[in-house]
Image 1 (tube, rainbow, N blue to C red):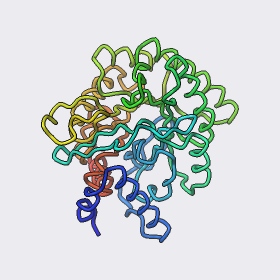
Image 2: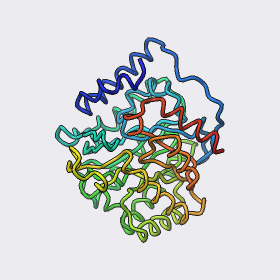
Image 3: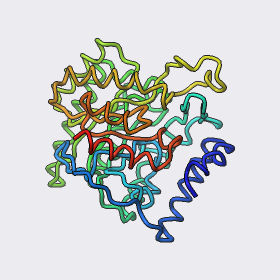
Image 4: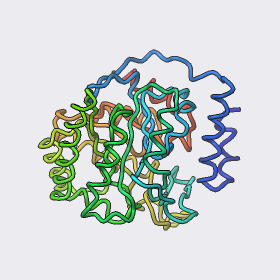
Length: 338
C-alpha cells in the first residue's frame, strides 16, 4: 500500500502515536526482509571529512533513542542523525505535545527532548547492524541550569564519540527553557571552546577525529547570524545545520492548533530556514560546510537549499506529508543539480 493511501489513516491518530506506529511498522518490514529502497544513480558527497553515500539525510528528532536505525537505513538516506539525547533520561513535556496542521503542511511540537538517556542510546547504536554515516545530536537536561549546560554537552560528547560519524550540538530547540540563550555570543563562545578542547582530547584517545556540527535556530537577526558565523570560524567548527524549528506562526492565522506552543516545522518554515542558511553561507563563504534543514518538502526545496550553499540536506516533517518517496525525489533533484 502506498503512503498516500496510508496517510489519511495515520492522520486520524494523535500525531505522536502515529509517529510511533510508523516506526514500529518499519521495524517489522525490516525483520521480514522487505526490499529496501531501489538504488539510484547519484554520487557520494564529501563534507566534514566524511564521504556521504548521498546528500539526503534524516534529521534528528525522528529516532531520538537510535531504536530504529536498521529499519530507517533501508529507506535510502545517505546519513541518519539520531537524538536529541541528554545525559539523563527525561520524559519531556506533558502530552499532547505534537500537532499536525494539514492545511499548511506543518507540525508543531513541544516534545522537550524526551529520550531514554545517553547510555540507552549508546547501547542501541552498539547493537544495531547499521554501519552508515551516523550523526548523534546532543543536548542538555531540562533541569540543568544554563550556567552548567556545558557539563551536559561534554558528558554526552564523551559517551557518543566512539560511535558517531559526527556529533551535533543542539542549542536551538525552542522546547527546553532558555536553551536558545546558548546562541548568544558569550555563551556560545564558551560552550564551543569547551567542546572543541574535549574533541581534541577524545580524538587523541580514540585515534579518530569526529567532527562537530552546530544546529542553529531560524529565528535569528542578521547581527546574530554574523556573530555566530565569526564564532564558528574562530573555533573551527566542522559544520552548521540550519535550521531547527521556528517560534513564528506567520501564515497560520486561524488554523486549528496554530496557537499551540512549541516549534513549528514544515512548509511555513521553508522560506525562513532558506533565508537564514543563505545569510550564513554568505558570512562563512564556504569555509564551513552547511547542512540545509527545516521545511524541505520537495525535491525543489532540496535543490534550492543546495543552490543557496548547502552541501547536505536533512528531512523530517516533509516525510510526514510526502512519505518515504520524498527521499528519492530529493536525491534525484540533487543529482540533476550536481
